[in-house]
Structures are given as structure tokens and as C-alpha cells.
Image (cartoon, rainbow, N blue to C red; front, top):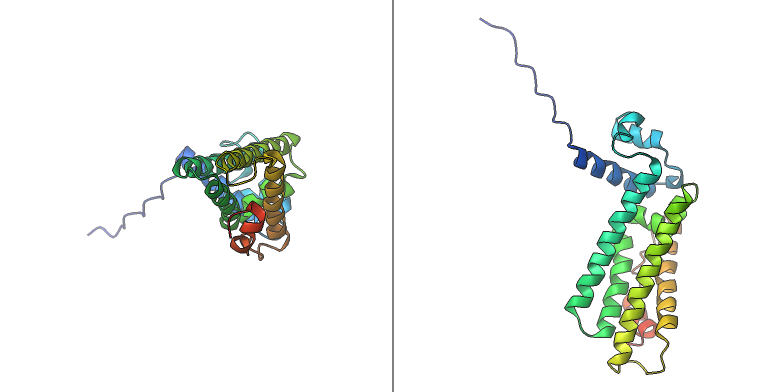
Amino acid sequence: MNDQTTPAPRPARPKPGERRLQILQTLATMLQEPGGDRVTTAALASRLQVSEAALYRHFASKAQMFEGLIEFIESTVFGLINQITSQHEDGLRQLHDIVAMLLSFADRNPGMTRVLIGDALVTEDDRLQDRINQLIDRIEASLKQAFRVTIAQGRLSQDTDAAMRAGLVLAYVMGRWLRFAKSGFKRSPSESFEQQAPLLLQTPA
């Protein structure tokens, strides 16, 4: 009689792409925790129960990890903006839905909100803040285009300054992101937006 038991199979190692995603998800989670502005690769490796060397097999540097988060933000936000503008011809509806989406994205992704406002990038490579600045400029350009559509459709006065209005709306969104982060993610960025939207976007009463 054989008393030997069959050893339990070792859990499968994550594939390279899966491990990269796991690293980014864990980094985003740590950014939304108290002291998240000081996430180190050592702390990240500890959370993942791997060595720092294992992290660097997937990312050449910590900056590259943040670039991965920024790429996720870019692809998600602009994918949704394109979806909104293709689904709705009405300019005011585009404006409303784009702003609602930007606020909702932050609500669902607290850690990435700290990347958007630059809070998580203060001690990181300067090129990361430059990348975020470019992303914000693209959001402003999308808002400006939606205002132009709204003006062309006669929903706003022809003398409306699309660039100025887009800058105003962007300032509102970024202010909401900032308040959300500084409140410890307790004040929802979407709070009271529906009540404020008519004043912000000059939608019909």
C-alpha cells in the first residue's frame, strides 16, 4: 500500500500581461490609501508579495508604471468621449455627458484621480506631469468642440466664446477632482452636478 499523497499542484504563474495589469491595479489601489503620495516600489512589491526585481522585469522604472496608469486613463476617457460624440448629435447632450463621465470616472477610480490632479506625481519624473498636462489639454479641446457644435446648432448664442466656456467647465471638473482627493475620497465629484449643470452649461430650464 502506498502511503504517499499526491503533492498539491503549484498555482499557475500569471502571464506577463496579467502580471503587468496586476501591478498597475495594485499601484492604483495604494494611491487611494492614506499616505498614497509616497508609494515606493518596495511597498508595492511587498503588497504583491514579490521582489522589487520582479517588478522591474515588467516595468523598467516606477515612472513607467505611472505611464501605464496614464495610458489606461487616456484610452478609457477618450474612448468614452468618442462614444458620446458619436451617439449624440446634440451639442448640449455631448457636453452634459462628457462632464458627467469625467466626474464619474474619478468616482470609480480614486487612485487615478490623484494622478489626474498631479498629486501622485510630485516626486516622480517631470515627464509624467507633462503627459498629464497634454491629457488635460485634449479634454479641454473635446469640450471646446462640443461647445462649437452647441453654438452651431443655435443652442447657445453665436457670440459665445467656445474656448472660454471650455476652460470654465474644465476648471469645474478639475476642482471637483481636487476636492474629492483632498476629502479622502469622501466628497463625490458627481455631488450636485445635475442641479449645477444648467448653470454650468446653460442648458434650457
